[in-house]
Image (cartoon, rainbow over all chains, first blue to last red; front, side, top):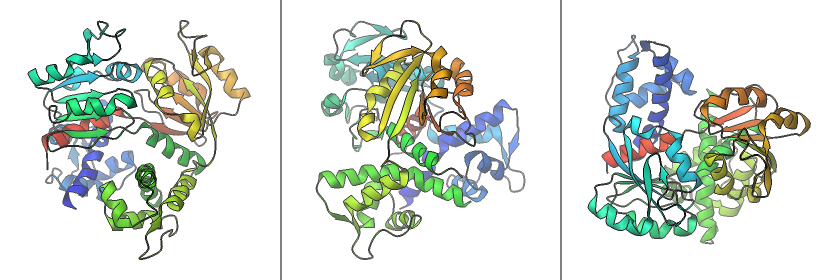
Length: 207
Length: 207
C-alpha cells in the first residue's frame, strides 16, 4: 500500500516540475501550496501531503522557494544525472520521439538507434546512424545502457522485449503491447489513447 | 473541489478499460474490486470509491460483471459515440498518431489532414489526402469537427490554436506548448516526457 501511494505521488512530480518552470520563467521566487494547487487543478493540502512524502521542504507560512523546490523534485526523480539511451524502432513514432524533445539537454543521451528495415539502416537521425536490429543484443551486452525507447510495431514487441529485458534498466514502451517490469528492468508503458478518451469526456461534460 | 476529484477519477477510467479488456480476453465474467485493484496497482476501496462517483454499479459481495462495467465506463467517457476528427500537422508525430491506433474502429474518424509543408500536401495517409493548412479555417467553418489532433511544431502552435479554438470541441495537443481550454474547446495537452521522468525514478528506486 505504501508503494502504491508513492507511485501515484511520483507520477505527479513531472507535473510539478512543469508548473514550477512556468513560475521560474516569470521569475517568481516563492510559491505557496495554494498557488501550486491552482495551477495543477489540485488542492493545497494535496500539494503539502505530496511533498511531505519526501520530507517537508517548505516553511509554514512562507511557501516554497521555487528554484529549490524545482531542484529538489529533479533530484527525487533522478533527473540530476545522465542516462544512456538507445532507440529501438526508427519509424514514425521513433523519429518523432527523437525530435520531440531535446533529450540530451535534459540528460538523456541517445547513443544508438536500431531498426529492422534495411531502408532505414545506415540513415542518420540527429547524427546517429541506424544499425540493423540484429546487432542489438551484442550492443547491449557490450554497453551499459540505462534506457531503451521501444518504438517497434506490435508484432516485433515481444521478441525485442526478450532481448532488452534484464539488460537495460528501463524500457520506455511506445509499442501497443503492454510489457511487464522484471526485477532489473522497469517499464513505462505509454498509452496515448488515454488522453484522447479523457478529452472526449470533457467535451461531453463541460463544466 | 468536486470537479477536481472527478477529474482525477476520469483520468483513471481509461486504465480501468484496459484492465477490463484483459479480463474480457480471458473470458472472465465477474471481477471484484480487489482483483481490479491488483491489476491497477490501486486498492479495493479506491476502486469502489471511483465507481461510486457515477452511481454504484457493483453488487456487494458479487463484484462487477466485466462486460457491463466495460460498457458503462465507455458510456461515461462518451466512447459509445462517433467523433469527427482532423489532423493538423502530418510530420512524424502526426503520421505516427494516424498509424498508432485503429481510431476509426474505436469511433474516431479522421476526416481531413492539414500541413504547411508543400511536399506533404497531396500525399495520402490512410486514404486521406493532406490539404494545405491555408484551407484549415475554411474547412472547420463548413464542417462540424469534434476533435483536432494537433501535431505541429512549436513555432506554429499558437497561430494554429487561434484558428481552431472555439470552432472544434476538443484539441488533442501533441505540440510542446501547453494550450488553455476555452468555454467551447476542451484541451488535452500531451506530455510524453512525464512517463520518461517517472521511469527514471523507478530505475533509481527499485522496490
